[in-house]
Length: 135
Image 1 (cartoon, rainbow, N blue to C red):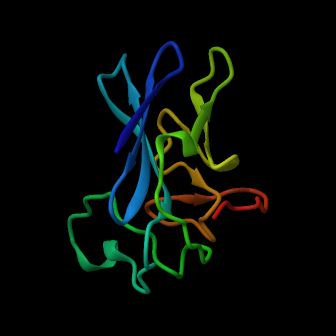
Image 2 (image 1 turned 45 degrees about the vertical axis):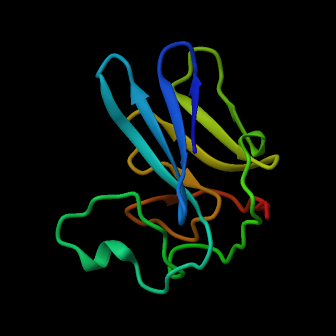
Image 3 (image 1 turned 90 degrees about the horizontal axis):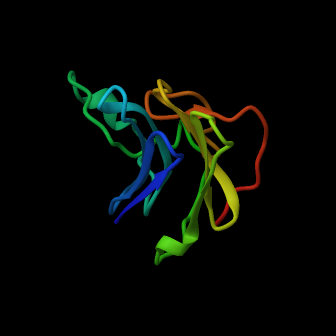
């Protein structure tokens, strides 16, 4: 499932894959993806970081247990579970899942911030404060 949002200038796509949920920031001016963030795993969280196993890192990947808080996202995941907010003229999107802030992503943020990230990794930065995470 791919969900598209627009802030009047650029687009945000949320991609729900079988194993993870990732968001991408598309800059219309630059005609390319200029930001991305892992939001959460779906299903079992791997113990080892998948990016450690490859020389050429090509995401999206699940985040490993070393880098993320334990979570068990209840299925099914529906389009109505997501909401995206942004300030007028802002290049930053707030990504909500089931009413809770799960990600912050703006142009040239690679990676953006995820509330499920325990510490910074190649796929997500930790948020500055503790945020209640959805199930």
